[in-house]
Image (cartoon, rainbow, N blue to C red; front, side, top):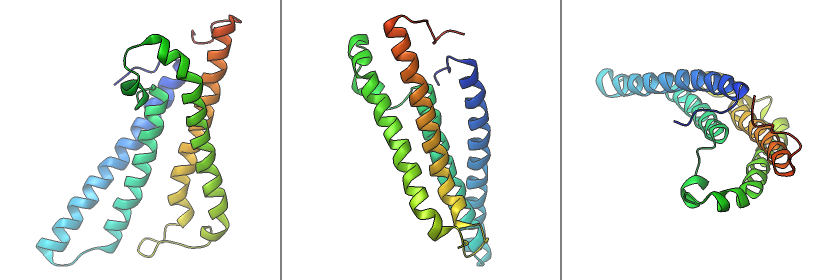
Length: 165
């Protein structure tokens, strides 16, 4: 795993990792519990499957945000080790990450009036809580891409080196 270069990013990664690990443990426990309840005891629990799905959604979005913060996602494999190519496509990559964040937020915003009053069938979790995972990741994508773009521009024009503490 790549080490986050800035202190605020390290703090954020530690928090995301803790919540994602918690969600993963719950997901594994609920899935295992559901298998035992269904196939050993013969009494499946609907709420266990729902909770497992809920935690998996949050886990997925938190991990995608973590990869964006660590800059450890697909572009590194596509563009190889060429420093020039990576630097040249960095603004485009940051724009795409930010645009993805905007799309996630707009999607949740459009659905919010519809889903804000409904609840999940087994646990009664407000449906908006499922979609807040995407909105949280989207907001994180926007913040990270804007901060990295500002740093990239400042470093390129030589205003000051914002990438150092």
